[in-house]
Length: 101
Image (cartoon, rainbow, N blue to C red):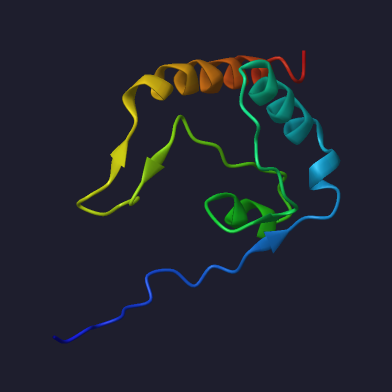
């Protein structure tokens, strides 16, 4: 067997001071909890939100449901939780749209 390793991303994890107390994060946390989710909220981003955080832009990352093996041929998601997760994302979008109202 031969194993080949390619670096596909070298993005560093990011921390933006004050991001945890931003309106964006507070609203997102409230929406998650209102929909029955217990969001794992931390101070650092190591996924899609890192690019924004590294530029000093408040950001979050969230998903619609429990999935595994992301971006692999074996990627899969549980279907039933996706319905509630989709509702959560729609509620989050509406809530954030009202942010400057």
